[in-house]
Structures are given as structure tokens and as C-alpha cells.
Image (tube, rainbow, N blue to C red; front, top):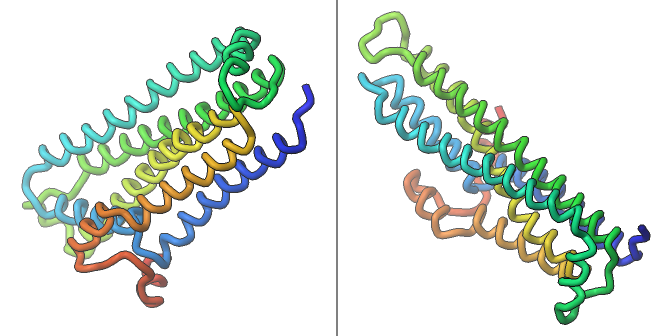
Length: 246
């Protein structure tokens, strides 16, 4: 198999953009109001409220709904992987289909197999992220069960706050892993365009990153969530940035 120079450049561009955006989203959450930021604050509020009310039945049900959604994506990823691996054995037929489409770059069975292997790796990555998220949501379930009781006098308000912040941190990490799995699905859609043409692959990658950025930092739902705390999208004060980093 021999990839063209254009193929190598576009693949390197794809990987670089994915890695860069992942790091950018992680670092900018310390200085910019985003979905990650506001969801972390709301999770802290949730866990704080949890330690100060008598029953947690509704909380357990809500957490169970979240776990079911992540489990659905994990099981769907296995099915997608099975389909991709099946196509690996029929690469010559895939080439015939691709060549029948207009504006498709010349390809060969070995190139198609290479691209299918790359697509499979993306979904393997997503599967590991989803399953790790499921485990961490399970840890949150344990914490909900172990939360200080409302009528208990064995815990001070300070101890309840510490418990709430640590439980929210585990909850937040589970949410990040779930988000990373979803992000892999978005980039997999861009990767599919490589089967048609390298330049379309580049364009699709840029579109995917633009969509992810807009939803994370400029979406209407972000404005609504921030409004709950009286905030607006944009950067926040340096003092608050330091407190978040701690």
C-alpha cells in the first residue's frame, strides 16, 4: 500500500486537529465559561443538595438515566465496530461502490482496508471512553448511596461540603469521558469523508471542530445554563480561574 502525499498530510491534519481541540477544551475550561464549566458547577450544586435532603430516590433515578444513555452508546459502538470489521473482508466491493460515485479520488483495496482500520481504531477509542464513563458513573452511584444522611449528626456542614465537592469531581470526570466518546463519533463522521476525497476529509474535519466549538462555547443552551448562575459566555476573572484550577 502506498498513500499519496496528500493522504498523509490530510491524515496528519486530522489527528493534529483532534488532539489540539481536546487539549484546548481542557485548558480553556479554566478560563472560559463553557458547557464543561457550568456543568461542573451544577454537579457541585446537585451533590451539595443531595447531602442536605432526606431522600435520594429521585437522584438515583436521574443518575440511572444517565448511565443508560452511556451504556447505549457503548453497545452501539460494538455494533459499529462489527460492521467496520466485516467491511475489511470486502474491501474490493467497497472500491467498486466508491468508484461509482462522482468526484471520488482513485483508490485501491489496500487503501480502503487501511482507512477502515483507522475508522475501527476511532470506535475502539470511543468504546474505551464510554465503558470507563460507565464505571465512573457507577462510582457516583456508590457515593450517592454513601452520602451523609439529612438527619445525621455525625457530619458537620464542612464535611458535607467536602463530600459534595469530591463526589461532584468524580461525577465531572465521568461526564468528561462520556464527552470524549461522543467527540470520537463526531470525528469519525469526518473520517468517513476520507473514503471519497482527501480535500473533503480536511473540509469535514474543519466543520466538525467548528460545530464542537460552537456548541461548547457559543450555543443557546450554554447561554441558558449560564443564566442560571447569572453568567454570560466569555472569559471570566483571573481570581475565579485560579479557584477553579485548585
